[in-house]
Each structure stands twice: as structure tokens, then as C-alpha cells.
Image (tube, rainbow, N blue to C red; front, side, top):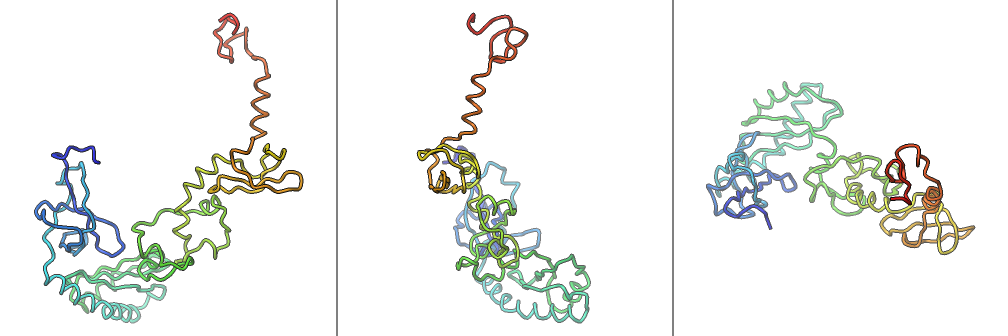
Length: 307
């Protein structure tokens, strides 16, 4: 339950413009009868767009901080969207042909051409290793299509999201089904989970580190904090041994005692190095007692026995 009093709650609508895309929030107070699944027309930084309401959210912010939904989408709007979607392939072909004629776009790969619902804006998505100046191409396309043209360079992960397909696990790619944002991913995440650093094991279809490396990373970090590291000396029910490997999600390690290997749970282990260090410290006398501030906690000039 929310801690905000009901009378002070402000509710905004979460609108999604793509099947798997970010949610953008809008004030829908002018149309209180809107429901999840309804299509609406909104004004965005990229012009007028049609989106679908995916959720509603209570916020503490003033609703003046959110743009208002212009209106619910009409049957005519939905028909227009379908019409312009059918013309997107044609627009992509025109873009590729014009780029070839102009030259200078050899390294660019044009991935998709997307009209907004009423055909007034055409967004062309492309990928390239380096940044490309597309001003001249945009001007040429504006003469060929009856729309404002926006050429946008995207990264490999966005390309994989658009193209879809299956991942190495055999399932539909995460980016094409439920991921709305791409989290930062590092090689450290693979190392922490004990995954082979072979590129074929950790690289996705986009050529970047797999998105799924981040899913269990935090659980591995927390689990490893409670377990001894490799080569640590440990006491076991079978005698003193050395840690060979760590299995964080099983809360266990494999230990070699003499020439025998055992799989042992955390509660069966005694960290010998730490234990011996504590025993050694407990036997040491107070180094400063009587000559200054005492590191055993006694006040200056007093012995622990006199307190």
C-alpha cells in the first residue's frame, strides 16, 4: 500500500510506444475513463505519437510536471497507423537507394524505417561503427517522402532488439521480449559467476556481453561474501583441508583433505586462518597499558582489574 494519503495522490498513465519499450508517464486527468490497453495520442519531444497505456502509477509529484494525454485514439487513427506501417518497407528501400547514390554510407546498415501513426514523421534507424553525418541524406529523403525525416544511429543491442530471434539458450531474446533498458555489463560479472570467459559463452547475438549476465550477479556477490575463497585453509569434519572451488548458489565449497575431495556446506567449515589470528591476538598482552591510553579499553592510570 502507498504511504501517500488517498486525497493527495496523483495518478499518471504509463504509455508505451513500442511492444517492448520504455514507459513514459502522462497526465490523463482530462480522460479519467481510460483503461490499460487503450491507445492514446500524446505530444512528445519527437512530435505527435500514438502509444498504448500499459499501467497507471501513483506519484507524489505535481501533475503539472507531466505532459497531458491529448486524446484517446480514434478508429481513424488506428486505420492511419496500419496504413503507414505498410509503407515503412518502401521508405527503407528509398533510404538505402539514396544513400548508395550519395556515397559515404558504406559502413552504415539501415535497420528500419518507422512512420508515426499519421505519417507526419519518418524515423530511419541505422547502425555504424563510427558516427556518420546524415544531414544531406535526411534532406534528400525529405524530398522523397511526405514526412519530417529523422535519421537515428543506434547500437548493436538495439539492433538485436529490433530484429528479434533466439538467444543461445534457445528462447526468444530477452531484449525482444521483456527488457526495456540495457544495464551496464562487465566481464567481472562473468568471473564472479564462474562462467567460462570463452567469447562464445558470454557474447550475445549482438556481439556484446549477454544481458543475462546481470540477472544473478548480485546473488553471487552476496553468496560469495559468506564462503571461503579458493586455496583457503579450512577445518572440516574430515580434518584440515584446502578449498578447491566455490559454489555460491549451493552455499557450499569443494575441499580437498589429504587426497580426498569433499563437497561441504558452509556450516560444516571452520576458517582456520581467521580462527588462528583471533587466538593469537587474544594471547597478546596489552601493549600500552600503564604508559598511556590503553588499547584494552581501560581508562588511563587504571588497570582492568581496578575498574
